[in-house]
Image (cartoon, rainbow, N blue to C red; front, side, top):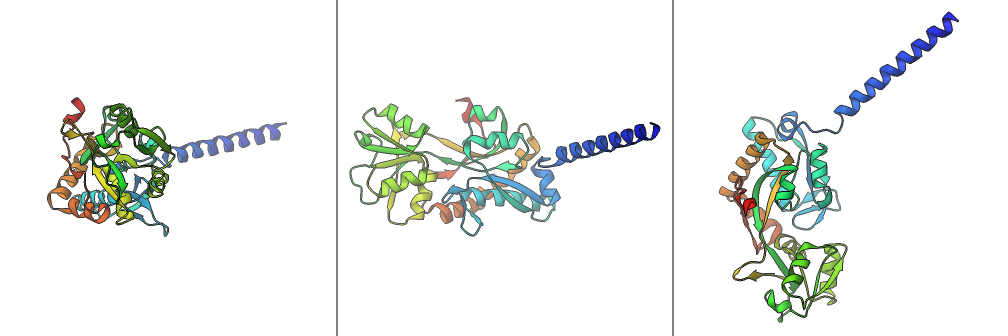
Length: 291
């Protein structure tokens, strides 16, 4: 009886020890200690889109390309250089729009640059470096299109955007005569436009420039205005853990240098062609959130 009791106690101790080890392992795995700590450690996980030409695209060979990819890489490398660290290795993580805040809050990424418009709702759960880019809602039309050259000329036309798109709804509110045609993805919208099934496509000018640059000579990007002002203003930022001010300050310092030395303009030209409707923003200035 004594031996049986001893074996039971020993087995219980082993199970308890294993459970403690697993718990400790789980607690340290997959969580980010913050961008600055990851840069110092030599490895960072950055979030971006994988399906947007010119912005964040995973290529057939597994490499990454696009404006947001280049901006994020440049920011990380400049922070590393200033802090006296080697350039860290980068692991890219796909961050669909609906998952961005959750991935940051869970520590699954160190930062996200993914056509990430800064707004008051998002700023309640994550902090933002930037904004680094100002863009506006625009139109993409076929290059031979002559009847569409402004917001007003869309009246009665077939306008494409993705399902549940805020940009398309904004146009519909301004011009009730617009016929909305929705697709699941921007690439499907682009093909519908190419094939003549819709008259125009709308979303941020950055995204439209990416598709235009991917098919030179096929499309034209048209800026939209209302009452003499851009139809919308979209300020792109870099999302990080809420209230990590040291990281926000480091990102803004890097972004300001990138803009001031002309690197931003080169990145735009390399990825978005003439970059119509795209301009550098003012890192650190979030006063637009109060308007």
